[in-house]
Length: 143
Image (cartoon, rainbow, N blue to C red; front, side):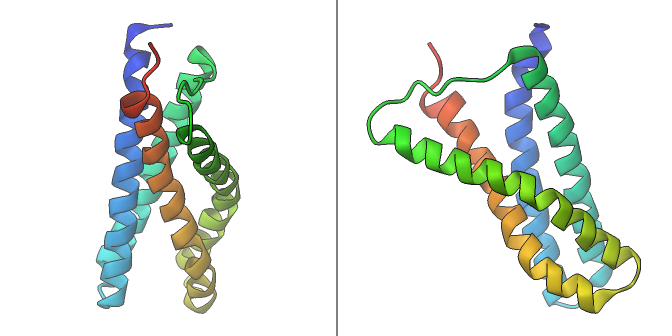
């Protein structure tokens, strides 16, 4: 495995955190009626999440799975977060695509209806991505 690949988990956590900040900022902007700033944040969150996915897949292609070494109560907590994160990460992809598609088509009524589901799921996935990283690489790093 090339040396630079060991940096990808840290990059991935930064990308997930950045995505979460952009999503919250975009939501704040649209609540204030600042449509252009909202659009910029949401598109930036999409690009950031896309770069994350490419980086994540690259890392795991070369590295494989990372085992969680924690014990006790940390173990079921970690796996609960990981399982919910993984399921929702898969489910949110089509939601994001439909939400963005409706916005680009100017179908804002239907965009808002699906965005009410997409935003909290996408935000949860972004935040729990950082939590999974913290568990694996900061709190319980492999020996």
